[in-house]
Picture (tube, rainbow, N blue to C red):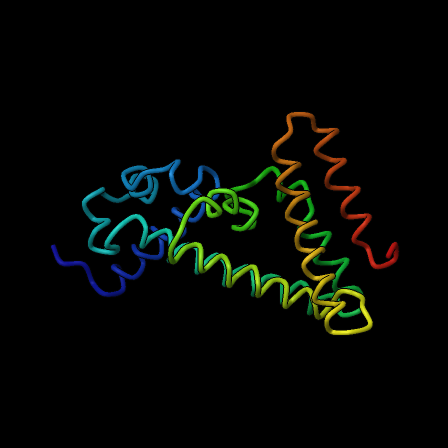
Length: 191
């Protein structure tokens, strides 16, 4: 039976969404094509009608998730014009970011795995991280553009580092300490 163009597009989007969650939860190497397709409610063989390889899927998922981060960050900043940095930091450095890796930031979930890879996915992460620094440099304090850009790098490193470290520890108290002390340190009121 032939699948309509609309159904094909719907299936492809479902694969991208499911893979995005599973990749963030398990890493690119921690989940196979068969698992992704099963979770999407489709057959393993159907995968190759949508993607040439798992690497192609990883690239498309990475691009889509990074684009989503950009949109989300812009929404958060726009919704809090008086305190955009506080709003973004409070959103990012949260229990939800720690407790739900499959639904959280692609960078915090996959940056370690990407650091050991090469090619298009790594280049996509490179461009995405640069874009986040650019966004942050428009809302962090600083007298000059150079100072704000440097502060953007520091802020991004601190935000992601807090979430990554909070995920890595077993103790809820220690995890919360990574989150709350970093969030407090990044607050413009304390800078």
